[in-house]
Length: 64
Image (cartoon, rainbow, N blue to C red; front, side, top):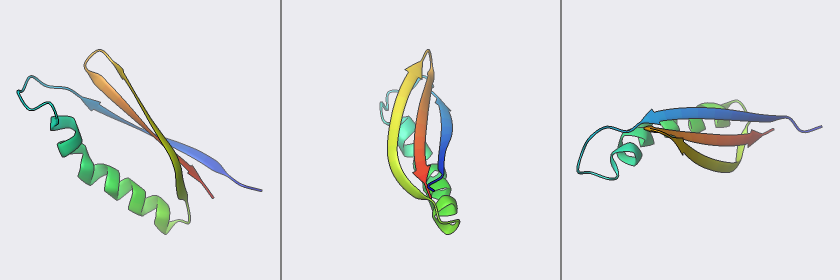
């Protein structure tokens, strides 16, 4: 029987002229999460994002 897990990461926007600042600053943390889950046998199956106010929510869906 497969197991499923979701990891939610939250990043807050700041005032800057760089519209990609969230993507640039979050890459390292997201890669660390992916590596940790892969080490435990989890496989990334899907992703999703949403935003609310100044926050961006990134959802990583895993299965094992």
